[in-house]
Image (tube, rainbow, N blue to C red; front, side, top):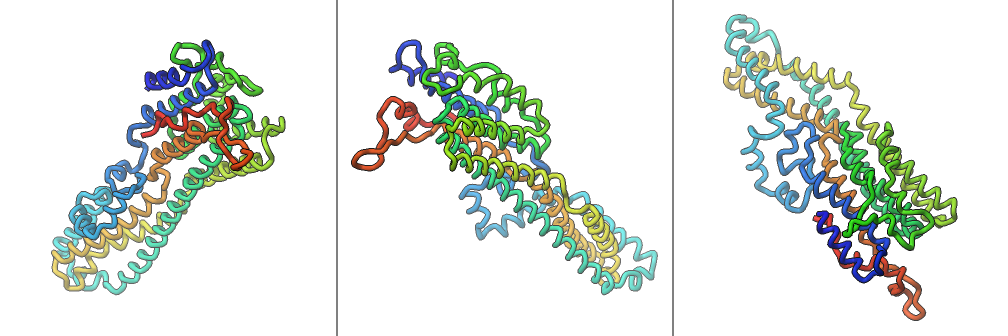
Length: 426
């Protein structure tokens, strides 16, 4: 990767004056750092999904779906496939211990208890009375499942908004901030590219310092000749690009209690500096502030979902009623003159159904443990980087045809990036 990066930098510098590196070199450095994160540090599958078994199947919400997965999921042969995989499914493996216990209990009831206690056979647990409890259990499990699905839907909505806001903010930084001050523009996009990863760390209690150290390195980038890129930058704006890679940025972010909020504060500081110098128009300034407020809102709502479960008293009450119902179900079924084998089979079927729905509601209650945050963070980082690495050619007003491509030196500074695919693209 580094060899490919150096070759691209060398090729882009062939026509330049000796001893001078264009201000595209820091952009190449940023491109190389993004490539390291996407194609080296995060290339492996996500191992922080819980339960981990739910990430083993192609048809799972722990992955970003493509058209092939949708086609397979909606295939008319899905019924046969799902029935054939029932005993090997992820859900079956999750509820197997509980299911075995209730099946064993039903066998004990029909083979031992009902033979020794004659009143249990016909009068101990009337089926009509037990049916009243089943209505409440079905209602409670359905309500809990709906609440869990609502939490999943809200989490998906928040990360969708994060995707859009990050991309829009990167485009604004590229169009307005980078044009006015390249040092601050690249500093801002380096912080922004980390935001989704740090939100993921916050939601899953992980700490990817390797990603932070890559995007906010302690040392400076070098070109193909080993020269310090920062010391060779020309045509820079009011501040020196060397500040973009200062070790203070890494120390600042590493020491923060809530790193995603620290990123928002840093980008807001960059916007404020340019606005104070009258280098940022009013409209993009307001839009950037609005986007930063949106990022703050998304972070707060994600933390709310992580820290506030469905009321535990509701969960415990539902679990107690479910256990009570399944314990007395085989006695009631056998008392209704069903055969022993039939009683065990019906108990097993009902237990599988209710335990499965209850387990699904518990798994979906923690949406950030199941969602494909790893892939989403990779895609967000790629979109943020594209806003800078794949910048469109500059435009100026033409005398006859309206807009035309600027062929001047300043307007053509990123021209080689228009036709060259970034090295981090898959």
